[in-house]
Image (cartoon, rainbow, N blue to C red; front, side, top):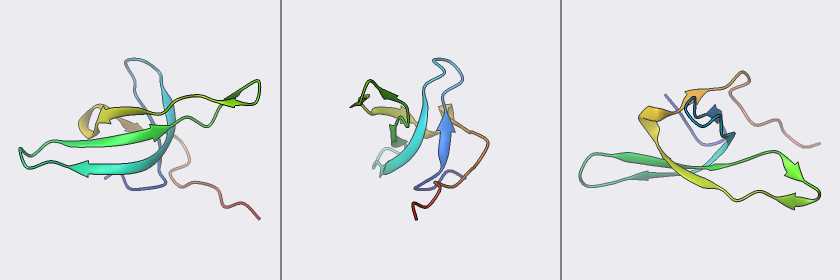
Length: 67
């Protein structure tokens, strides 16, 4: 089960990042917002919405805490 803070990857596009939002819709579909962790020359890449069934957990499942 995918939860907030999990690192996920879309195997079709190879887009990966951290789950920052989860939407449960009335029609039964669930979408998640994925924020990539890569920074391109100091600019954050845009986040993308995906169907939850399309994503796979990627390696470390929890966001590392900043300390």
